Length: 330
Image 1 (cartoon, rainbow, N blue to C red):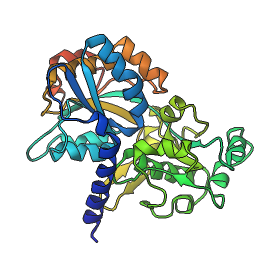
Image 2: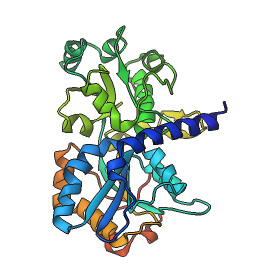
Image 3: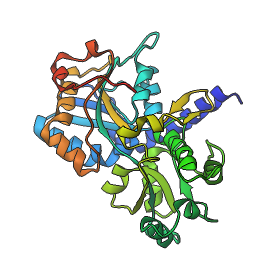
Image 4: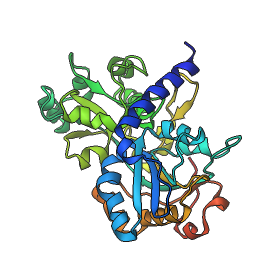
């Protein structure tokens, strides 16, 4: 099977799972008074339990959300499989897929929304929980515990989700930081190891249910689910904007030939060209940046980020331009 075929096979399987998980919130309703949001699977609790209901109470506009890996969602938009009003991505580089398609849907701009960091979340009922507590207390090396025999480690697919390739980039930074060559291969095996990779929106659930001992997560995911975690040094967690040059020293090329470079983790938001409820989409984006929306983001563990524009600033809707404080240079 060619690399391209394997990616499409993985994408098809992933989308089938995502469709089942999100069926209740992805019905094709485009009537006025509704905003359809495709969003990174790491934001399920934020959107479905808090931000979406709060926006609806304030505006009277219903929110229909669908989660998934940001790369997979971007391809769904490009292929016309989904027609969202708003797209919230977990990586600015994913938005670049929508800037200049030869035809069909596009999203020629994005605004940065929030930032986060990579962490190791673990199950409090795991037989390795005490060992992770020792790591958190600084009494034991993290890589020593992660390489323990029998430990069940989870992550997302690097072909479909930014957190998947960020896991690999984090470990490549860790190899340098800890002077531990080969750490990535020791912990992960093959980059796309199917025994470890799961859809983003079910990974936390697998940890909570005890199917996994530990996994690679974003800080906001473990905080909102009140899961124990091990924080990583800034030099490897992809969370400190001041260390962008250090992060950029590592790269990963997936099986489809797509090259990913280390960079600070940023969530972004845009309104695709095919939005059917443009006015409602504008109101939703404005709510994200208003005081109420920002309080909700902060309560879910998301970190504040300077609001900059990526893509073509001239295509940003006029009513949103006052939010912009600079240009994305990633």
